[in-house]
Amino acid sequence: MLKLLKILFLCLILITDALALDNQELPDINPGIATIQTIEPTRDVGYTVGDVLTRQVIITLKKPYKLVKESCPIVGYERRYTGQVIGIDLSDIKYSQRDIGETVQHH
Image (tube, rainbow, N blue to C red):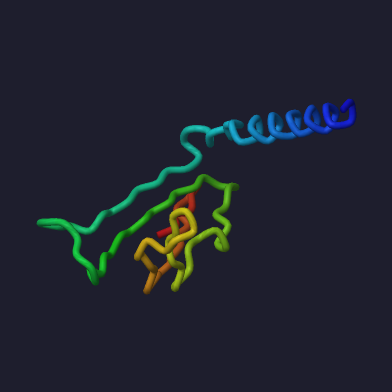
């Protein structure tokens, strides 16, 4: 019985630690280091199956901060929610980078 209580107590500690790690908030990037701008596609009405949308994302970072290119989405990536494909895939991606003085702009 004492062994069972020890095991249950250990499990309780492990679960509590796991929940505490899930609730950790990561620090925000200091203001002025990074900016994100999106240019959304213009639409008169909603979306239908088969629509091809063009969205632009522009990330501007102050030097010496860098964007890890491997963190960017890749062609063929299928967006998932709870493990199931939700029907959005990336069919074409164009990437460019511009050095503008003290910042680098990723488009």
